[in-house]
Length: 80
Image 1 (spheres, rainbow, N blue to C red):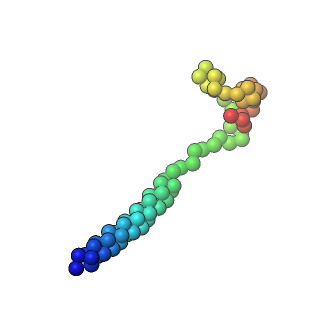
Image 2: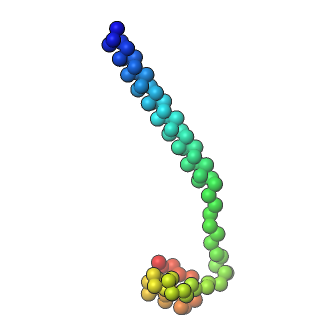
Image 3: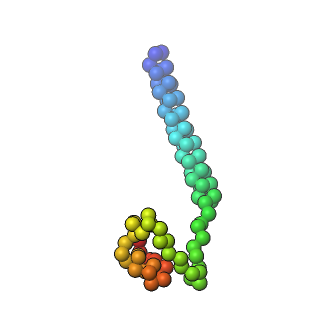
C-alpha cells in the first residue's frame, strides 16, 4: 500500500505543478496585454514644429560631433 500512496502523492504534486504553470502563464499573458494596452505613445513633434537645441553642458558632453553639427544647422538630429 505504501507504493500506491507514493504514486498518488507524486501524481498530485505533478498535477498541481502543471495546473500552477498553466495558471501562471495565463495570468502573465493577461498582465502583459493589459500593460501594453495601458501605455501611451509619446507624441513626436510634427515636421512643422521648430527645432530647439538642448545646449546644456551635461547634454553637450554626451552628444556626437555629427549630432552637434545637425543642431547647429537648425536641423532636427537624426544621429545619436
